[in-house]
Amino acid sequence: MPYVNIRITREGATPEQKAELIGGVTDLLQRVLGKNPATTVVTIDEVEFENWGIGGLPVLDYRAAQAAKEQKR
Image (cartoon, rainbow, N blue to C red; front, side, top):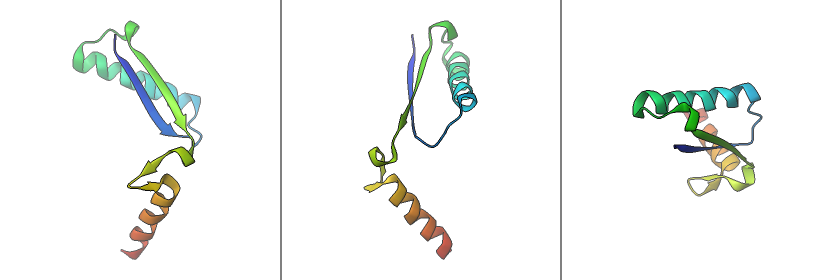
């Protein structure tokens, strides 16, 4: 019984988008590994920005730094 946990930042993913993620992951596990969709569990956790970090920075600071790098190009 596969269990997949998807974690995303809380940015307003719609119920339709979440359903597409759940269906897509379930289909992928069936297609690639032959797993039974009826026993595949997918959960989605939405994490507040202040609880998410990338490259040693809070996610909003990281994004700002990346945007600044892109503007310099």
